[in-house]
Image 1 (tube, rainbow, N blue to C red):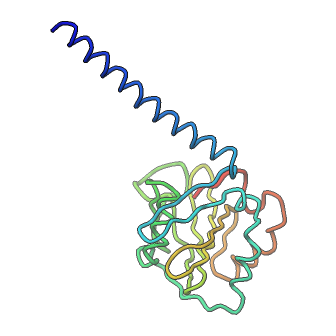
Image 2: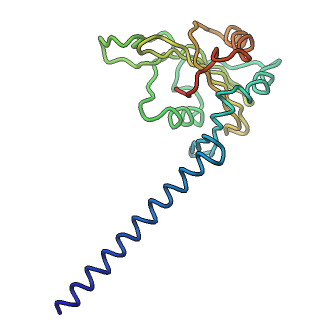
Image 3: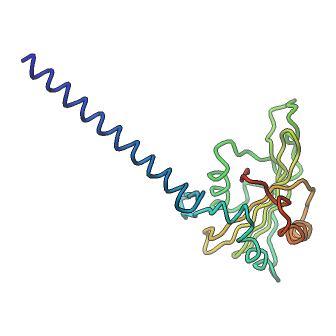
Length: 199
């Protein structure tokens, strides 16, 4: 009876170690894939699509030229309310940025500095325009210093097929200003982004 109890404990211990080993092995394999395979590829899963973000392409602006060309002769429907942005784009932004993504609508109060006086969002929507093929977004982000985040989405049947983002120290308020600034700085090192993606 005593031996059976000890045997049962031993079997449970072995099974527990086996589960832990399998989990850590999977985590290590996942880490190796991130480092060795595509150097920082992030999957963003929404209810409607699974989009792979190639962060190296974004940080080096490799995917920017074709995205900018997609705006040629395109009319965009403009929105000033974040909740009116198509849901699949909002889900993509929130899952990419993380759970703390909160943004004020255009013209609403927001927290522009790190001196917190009220419980306000740290972001404010500046511009959003889209059609069935392409979307462009700009918003201010507060903190130690105010900056502006620029986002471009290539759309295909209510899914995101390509994505670029940058972070600039500028006050770009409409489609023309945003696109002109991006085109004028896309080949200048560290003018549109640094070595990290922050939304």
